[in-house]
Image (cartoon, rainbow, N blue to C red):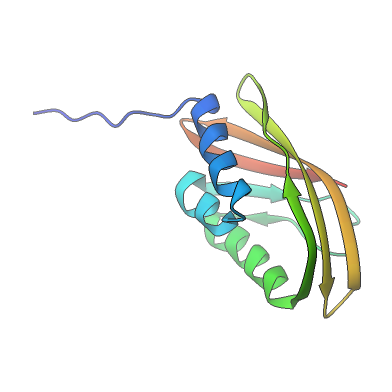
Length: 125
């Protein structure tokens, strides 16, 4: 008996991403939707985040930042816009951190999907 695993389309990945993002479940997005070799790219001179590659490194990048958040003022994510094997969403993060004080990041998050998994995330802010 042959079992074939259904591969999600970009639209399905984006819809699942949106379900989690609207609930601020970012680690669930990583666990369920990220490929093992995912890349996470921030602006070159970002004081907040650096490049990470591989599911474990990308998760650590997020965990390290979350650990520094002392107060949340606003968090919101737009619904995704889909084009081909990419989707993008807008994000506002207004938080107070131990390293940077209060910061407000308004960004576009761009995701690339291949074989039903997110293979890259890139942030523009």
